[in-house]
Length: 226
Image 1 (tube, rainbow, N blue to C red):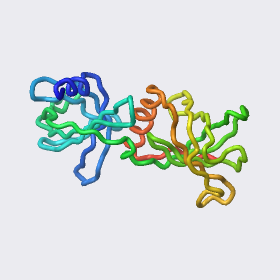
Image 2: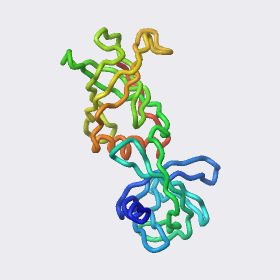
Image 3: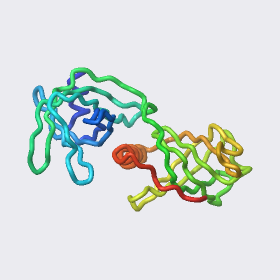
């Protein structure tokens, strides 16, 4: 069972999130890709930031996370850097994972963003605009102009333009709370939204493209007006 899980999680080409403490004692979370799993070694591609490989050291401990699509869980394991192979693509030779645990994807922090979106309800096909204030893999918090058709329990279809990707993400969500007005906002209504029936491709877009990029850069999306 363990060996089968190991082979499934660490197949060549699989994307992982690697968490580690850098030389300034800051916790970093970056994307990496499995190069190979052979014998007692796991080989990873060294994460790259601003076109330069991130600096690691031998004996450095890394935490690896792999998304499980079927439910909002992630596999988690720890490895140690054994060697760093220089070359056209720098590689990290790590110890073979010895223990694999599961954790909820809700452990990922919400990120402050200023992401424009459009929404509509099943009773009103007219799209209205709003702004996503923070975003996670399980849901988001959005700001809209007061709307009598949106209350706790309302199901929304909302469309988000993914920054830099040149495409839009269509999501469904359940409003779990409304704040009238939102904290710190004189005229806007706040909506706590949980994603509903999130497709695997959409989850991966959020997870790998957007959440990873926020963690990689430490930046938020630029704020925009409603």
